[in-house]
Amino acid sequence: MPTTYLGIDQSYSGCAIVTYTPATGRAVLERFVFSPRKYGTGAARLAHVHHVLRRYFHDQRQAGTVAGIAFEGYAYGARYRREELGELGGIMRLALVQVWQPGLLSTVAPTSVKKYVTGSGRADKDKILLAVYKRWGFEAPDHDTADAYTLARIAAALDAPEPPEHAFQREVLDTVRQGKAAA
Image 1 (spheres, one colour):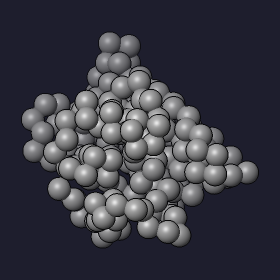
Image 2: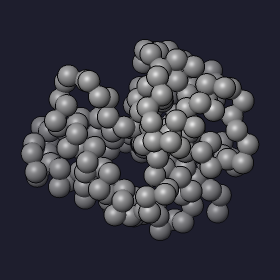
Image 3: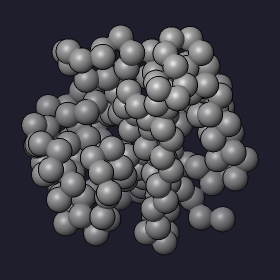
Image 4: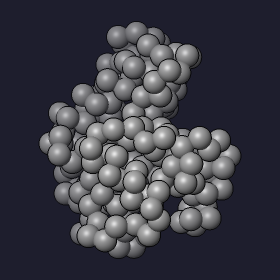
């Protein structure tokens, strides 16, 4: 079974997860929607999110092919829905560490995700969609998927024997390994 890598981009309303297999170049998108209208707010919704993600992560672990996971960290300084996003991020992290050992997990700052694919940590979302397509030929249907795909590529690159070709990508990987945010 070929080695795979997960890239996870969580948002207030859901979660995009891309499973990337370097040996085949195949990427599979899973999208989970956690609509407050459907699941409510507060603890009940968080419990539902935790249940869904933990089950998904457990199923992935049972497959035995995941060698690395990269997920988007918090956008510090963001103003909107900060607390709710923090709660959802905490639930996702809890589900991850309940299933996998911490050494497999890498937190990547949103600016580092942008920089890894575009060369700039300040690129707007449309430039990221285009850059993902130009760089890797992956046509992401939305911004969350483009971020999740980039995160899966980062997870794979962290585990690869050869460094990436571009200096800005190597800088992002070094920053992730050191646990810092890259601009």
